[in-house]
Length: 302
Image (cartoon, rainbow, N blue to C red; front, side, top):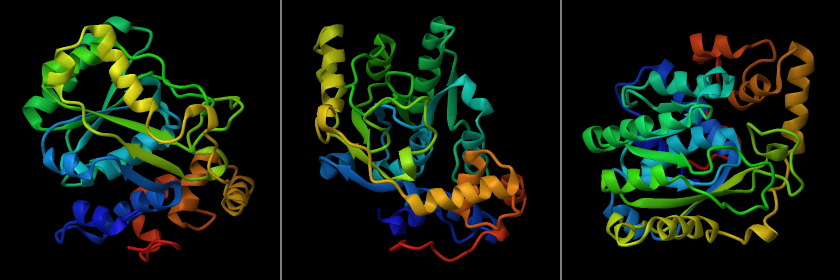
């Protein structure tokens, strides 16, 4: 985790102290929950810099979608549009991170495009919206190809929508496979997770770009298999993947916030990452981020 590079990309000398504090909140989340970002072919990513790309990946926890949009632009030089289920409009985690993004002068106009799984026919319109964001506004996109979060780290990715494959062809954009690991237990979790299990850290593995010309030469079924295989082959085999070690001390501090303030676990986790007093609430932070410590948090090497 090179947060110096992340800060250099996002920060501006014209930023107000308030904006810098909001930035530090996102960087603190990255520092806490991301162990490292690994690229298979760094030269190939540099060659694509500032050109729209499609990141296709698995989906472990909700937070990874948010933090990938903070970290990936450093590698490809373009802002990320993420697809999210419409239910996430009610998510405190998503809406808190979204509020910070929207406060940035470098933020893009539509960082999230929502889709409704109950309306599969709407995927065509959403794919067209993504295509326009890429072709007309130079955005890259993150798509969790299964559409839902997994409950266990062991099952491999098995499916991908043909609409998404068509999107890659229509946008003339390379697909970059992504695999998120370390965030899920072996035995299925009882519910979908917002944060890595045990408040551990994930690795974000970024594969070699697949050119659109290569996909165009393949029948649809083989296109799907090509992308699914590229994602599953990143990192360890799914059959032996394990969750990252838990952070018991952090979990204890989150539990203390929950007990002290009657908070839910998501708000307590966000406040703990921000290093705010026990009495603080996330709405207080968004109104007055100067409550948050300015100095890098423990372990920040930047």
